[in-house]
Length: 198
Ligand SMILES: [Zn+2]
Image 1 (cartoon, helix red, strand yellow):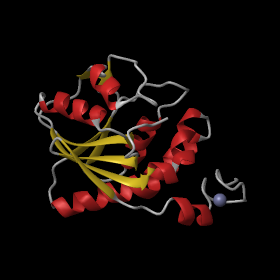
Image 2 (image 1 turned 30 degrees about the horizontal axis):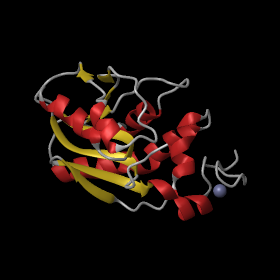
Image 3 (image 1 turned 180 degrees about the vertical axis):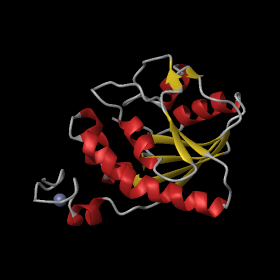
Image 4 (image 1 turned 120 degrees about the vertical axis):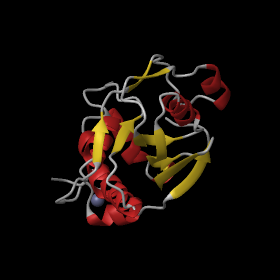
């Protein structure tokens, strides 16, 4: 196949050179209302990969990111817990806009560890309002209205593609905590500090 970024022949969806140039993990930490959020990349350096969710080839990009970065990270975390307890992965709104859900791909391919299970489509936003390009004020005035339909009192890692202002993750975590869900942390592909995503 060809590299998504530079079009050279490559065994992986992103070639070794482009992986090194654009997808070297930075591990950016942020805390939102007592929730630790870990992001692998800076949004602005990886925007072409993040935005691939809008096109068909994004399917293999998100699968690649999940397998290469999310799955090993979660595996190491679970080993560090030294517990047999199951950890569930919940994606922030896996609704399908364009044939596939990039967040569902992340949770699915990140859950290939023992003691890990993806819970698909259990956290749904009632509102389809688009946050892309919107201010923090707009986001706060237009909550997603998350509804959680999964099991209560479980251990969870939250999964999303991008953290921008954190309003979405904060709202999601509040709804989950009302069901007694213990959120260990949230894991996102990218962190966009500027307050605007696309
Ligand atoms: Zn390349």
